[in-house]
Each structure stands twice: as C-alpha cells, then as structure tokens.
Image (cartoon, rainbow over all chains, first blue to last red; front, side, top):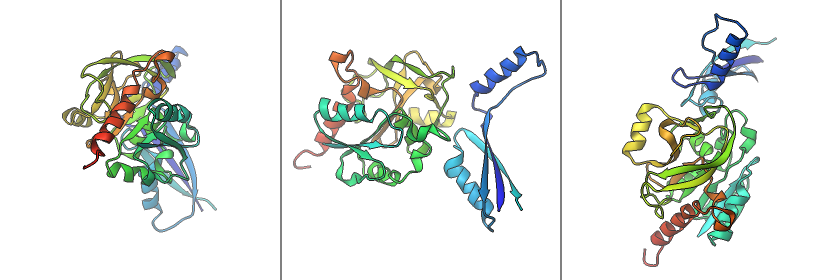
Length: 81
Length: 227
C-alpha cells in the first residue's frame, strides 16, 4: 500500500484573495518578512501499488482532483509498510 | 416542449427552475433525480443552482463526473438547449462544455441581491426576446461566481459572440464583467444570475422569464410542422 500526497495550488496567473487576506493578517501580527501567501489543497490518498500508478494519479488530477484551467498540482508517493 | 430539471444531491433551486418552466412558461417539465435520468425523452435540459455534493472539492466538480453527465453531453451534441444557472453553470464549466472556471468572489463573501445585467448578445436561442444592450435586473446568490479565463479564451469568447450577459457593476471580480456565456454552437448557456427567480411580475421582477420564452420560441421555430 502507498500513501499519495497530492498538492493542488492556484496557478501563478490566478489571483488568490484568500491568500492576500492571510498575508495581510500575518503582517498585522508584525511578521514583517511575510510576502505572498497562496492557499491550496492537500490530499492524502491511500492507493495500492501498481505499475501504472503514476499514470493513474496524473489522470485523476486532470479529470477530477485539480481544475487545469486555474490549478496546478504536484504529488509524491510514499510506500507504507 | 418538455424540460428536464436535473436534481443532484444538494441542488436547491430545482423547484424554482421547475416552477418557471412548468407553471409560468406553461410547458411540460420533470424534476429528474440525477441517477434515474433518461434525457432522450426531453427537448431541453435545465441544470439548477444549489450546492451539488456540498461544493466538495470545487463547486460543480463532483456533479460534473456523475452518471448523468454522459447523457447531458449527448443532449448538447444533439443541439438541445441546455441552461445551467449558478451551480449549473459551474457544472458546465467543470464538464468542459463551457470555457473557463469559477473562483471565490473577489471579496470572499457570499452575495445575495439583485444585479443589473447588460444583454451582450440577443442573437442566441436563450436571449432572442431581449434587446441588444438592454439592461435587465436579476438576482444573484453565490460565493464562487468570479468567472476566470485567460486572455486567449476571452478573445475567443468575444470573437465568437459567446458572451451573453455582463454585469453593469461587477460584483464578484469576474473577468470582463462576464455574467453568462454560451458555447460556440450556441445551444448551451451558463450564467450565475438566477432568471428562474425572476419570472413573475407579482413577485417584483419578471426579467428572467424571457430566457425561458426565448428557448420555447426557438424550439417552436425548429420543430414547426414541415421542418
């Protein structure tokens, strides 16, 4: 069994008003060094290990998990004993 | 004319959509549970507003891959009119039948009030009863109605006359003030404002009724005896 970690973020070109509000709030708390904040999603998925696993994850991301019009995705695969 | 109103788990404007098509427009309509739909029997498909699947993952995302969607695609391919309002618009975007995507409203709040719209294209089967550049007023009720598309897509929308409605005073940050767009073929309209909530003068506003009347007019013209 594997654990797949999927990270979905808004594309660079897409404005993220939520991230902006968080960044402003952190600055209000006097964390002066804080720059842009982008809010995304983190999915943990259990998956049985197969030969075409990566291909399947790519497909899942494109078809459902991320919207390629506004979002980018990355993922890592961990083996779980 | 016979309409199907597709009901997803979490749809909540389905009754209003049904009421507009059946009671007010006076045509046949059924509310069809998404798992039991047989769309071949219908002349038009209405995708209602609400929060299908609780807006999980992204608004409209899970509904857009549910079982009924292949049939909706078939109806679109057959040239049947398909109207998606609010969550219905989000479903059409997630299906890829309309270009672009929805983001959270610019001010991050859910908004529920009337907005003035400008009819940008009255040459569609959904807007024939409006005048070009006419200002109308329709209720909006959404948290994710900030329409986004890249420049290339926007140019294409403009070139093909796919922008049906724009906001007069953009409430949510939508690209190019877009409130509603059609597909290239012109038989799919997605819009965030709710025409089905504005179909009776007695209740204050009937600016939305002409969308339903336009669909019916088009259907009658294309299904006249001899055609």
